[in-house]
Image 1: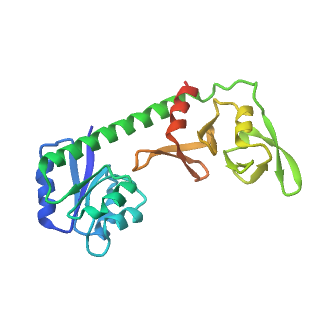
Image 2 (image 1 turned 90 degrees about the vertical axis):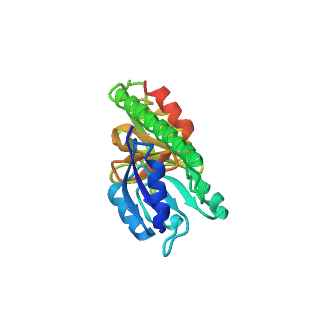
Image 3 (image 1 turned 45 degrees about the vertical axis):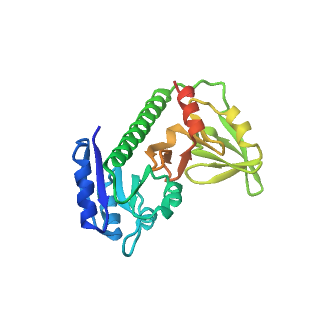
Length: 250
């Protein structure tokens, strides 16, 4: 497994030390080095590395500012001389937090953790995509093909196949199609029982998606999964339902 990596630190000696520590790890390829946050944002967005080693304190943009400014979500190992940022770093789902001066043995442990996290998350995505692909087209006819939904003062008969996703809203459920949204007085759990589980899969306690309208699945930097629908909407997949999806769509 090859991992693209970017080093971000305003100190040249720190960048050189990280390069030296990475030499015994041929599976990690350093694709860029950045000396400031602005450059880091540009390089991360352009190169989309899986892993970054990043200093917290830098002139202008600090490491946390960088993470807030990027759409791509890499795995992060923070390197800093200050331990007061550790809690915030782990709140940002950092893989590890290394204090300077860096210790090579401790650095190798961080690399090992990064490998284990990336490998595990890659396997989860592959299994999920494989399961979903195998499920399409296996529907039976014992589930509802239409649902009665409300729009303004009207009660409409909506074709289930037109629904992209369903979202819980209190005791009600919002159903979204390509062109509109509708409200059902039934809770999302009740509606789930009416829908074909080979096509409509629950990915979160408040969300059900139509697999036929799924565009892609993306790994999030915290190890979670994000599903992106054809209409541009994105939803997080809870770990609980990620496991259930694999069981449902065999």
